[in-house]
Length: 277
Image (cartoon, rainbow, N blue to C red; front, side, top):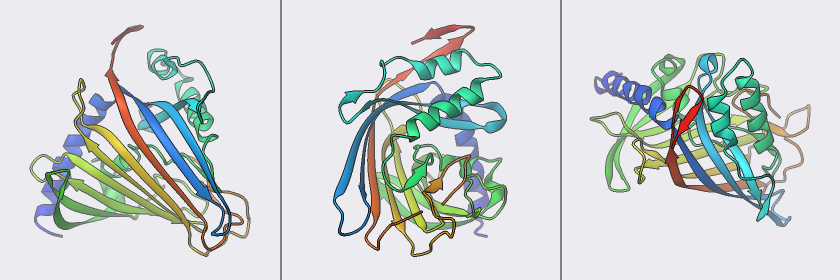
């Protein structure tokens, strides 16, 4: 292990401890474009989503991001209400159930042969939390400028269980973080997982935004590709933070690509039953 690695992991863990408290008070509007080709000979299906996203502290379940879709391909699918804020201010024994229902409701608008809830911009950060760092092996990469900022590349490969992303074959995740060496601040994440015939990669870039304290996700890029390994069970592939997994019927040219951008950040604080915006 490089002598510099333990210190960098410690700084990153402390950064995330403070970051999770700050980001849980930020709501953002997401504009999310998904494109899917069933095979190289098929046409491309496109979907445009507008959603609110929020990170919520679910206690033993940890800090989890949720997407509340309010517009699909230009058509409203519900009234644009602060349902995610209501989730936070009405915390109860049913909060986790309600939060998972919202996540599943939003996931049904995804297109392509892969059922997924890992397409949230904060999912990769779970692996860098101090509590979860022992689940993976770590190594340092090189230095790189990202959006003009000096960063150090930090590789991880998940080895412990239970897996933070559950799949039918319990496939391990792997990926990279680009962090500021002195502060441990995360500038970019890359999360990868290969399971049941699908290779998924989700990359998120963070940066400052007006009117909010923590750095926030600014853009997210995803790709899903077939690996040539088929599940005997068939069905759709699932890549979920707390679900199962499996694909079906993808040709050699099959692919899903998606790109999201984030704006209209707003903060709130909760005291008793009052939201302060």
